[in-house]
Image (tube, rainbow, N blue to C red; front, side):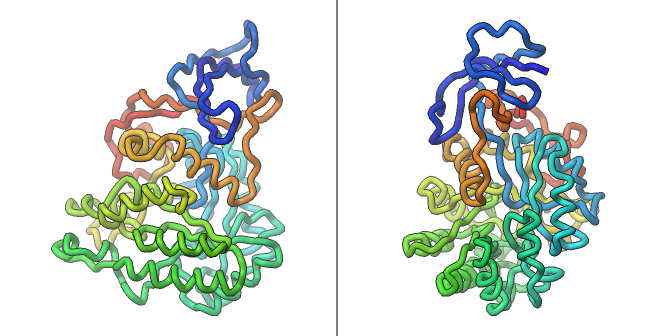
Length: 412
């Protein structure tokens, strides 16, 4: 099928066509020509005036039900949701059942890659069964295609285990994720520690829990001279720690969940469990600091933190509910509806598309004839309602459910 896309504005930072209006002829999944003279044979035409064309989004922290919990999400629904949201690549976190901790489990993810045109990449577990006691088969997983290594949202509390992991990946230039949240400081915590949340009567998680473990991991990274990615930072002081580490020349990157850019603890007074996240939503000043951290380049990447949950685990009392929200199919629209005045679209694409590819050694999409059409077309003016009927994900634990959002992906 040949599709003619005309009048599209390219958003591709550092590319020669960035901010240019172009016409493209796409033949199935390949770019046939750019700015063709007289295209007269095509099956479908899209007038993309005032629409944005950019490299498909890359999500470096995505949780999947499959394998093991397909009632929450399977690869079919996950990739449909990703495609509708403008994503081209998903990094699958290892807390599946069984855990992604062997070469065969990595190959299971790789085998599913390409479904609905979405590439899936495995993140291998650092420790067996995510228990933080014994290293997994990291080298074998690396050879099988694992992008990096993480114990998902189970912080590696044992300092020697984290040191061994950082040392081990040096032999193949691998990257270890740090999820900095010292649970010993906040057992059972579920909201930010603040006067605002004291009145809610819920156990709190102070920012100190994040900053203590982050400080430790940065110290270990410096000692081991390895590579590390810090995921899900949520506090202003964490940004300062990352900035200092980068100034020292450490091989470190960090990412923030989109939810922490969109929301603050102010949303919690309704006890809506869809706002229960890990780490918890922080103060408004922290949210603003995270946005500024992206603008300054201290924060490298935005991730979706897509965490599908069945209704039985969300439609309960706040302290009994599981953490997380679905985000893949609403990420772009949520940004465009609520955040575009604070963060430019170019900065958003840098953090959600360009920088992930740079950090994890992925090829950049080529915008030239004969190359794969690895791009998304987004209409920032189109309004739509996100509801259970239109949702592509199996789970709808989203704060945007039944809301009107502005901005829709037209083509991937």
